[in-house]
Length: 521
Image (cartoon, rainbow, N blue to C red; front, side, top):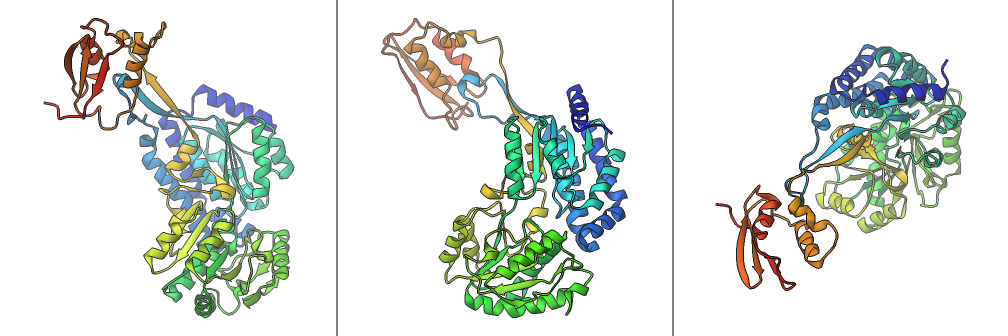
């Protein structure tokens, strides 16, 4: 079995050969990845059920279909994404030059996945890395061993082994892997581990994308259809047993709204999971005994009052959907991301108080506002900051490939999904191709320097909005004589100086005036 460094060296040699650069190669690998998911859907479902007790519905929706949608989106748009960008703002001095932006692959990238969505949190970054023309090493979470082993088996069967590799192992193996130089590191997980990722990346000045989490609030305020709100809140909170980085972590609402919400939550949970959620095939389990004990410890330390749920079983890592009230900002449940089926409700008295509470905390990965009043949703949106935002629903915004997904501040840095992932794994190379002509213009920047030349250059290199697309008129007064020169669309910088060169060198009192654009004739 090849060592980590040998695998990295093999992939780097492949990248340097340029094999991943052509569009056809990228498209072929994306098609192969699509086949991997489509042809092994049942194996994927079985692995996810073994690791997380995920019901089929959630596995298909949040692991398989979200991956397929991102693949479809990338394959549909890849050619457009790869095209050079020519819509570059230019000044008069560069009007005749060929200026553009190329998206170029970074090289060999490292993708470190997370255990809560062990398939899509590895494959979605991989879709972006392939589309951008990179080689990639995948490090799945060792906590979900069934999914980890399935990926290690399938990736080499469907994708080029010279370009993509899966490296399995625990925390020590990851630490060893991070000692190697990569061209980008993409990590999804906790803030604690993210700090060690950053330290390791700093040694090689490696850029990183960190998809973390945080305490994402659900702010319910004003007029609201309480039954619909309860259904959408319960689904987004208890989906995947609350083990989602974008799950609503807590609720902010007035006491009046809380009192109306609680009966609706009870009714909704009864409808979703029956009288005993632990017996429902639609309720998952906590991933490991260690994670179960962490959640139970937080629940036991909380000073809040359990009003719904609270039941648990250690033998099968079960915790019932649980709701608490009378929870304070200083409560044990409010000190870190919960990441489980426990929902605290905090009360506020006004819209401003709720916004102030949100802004006192670290910036969350997502922010949810439930209200029938558009002004409430808009006010919260305009006065807060979060990685993503969704009004009147939860977690669904992350399923749309056209929206960037990522954190801000403590909830992460960088984004992906769709075009945003392609950009993350691409270097935007600014390019300019200049002609050998117009040397009469270039002499202005050569020594010996003069204020006269500097004045011309400052004028020619200043970006003037809406000037170069129309017809501009300049007025020259040289040695007492006056001339007017029209710069028509497309005539460029040379016309000005060709005309001006017919005059003898002006005195220091030369005046140059640029009037407003006029219509060309």
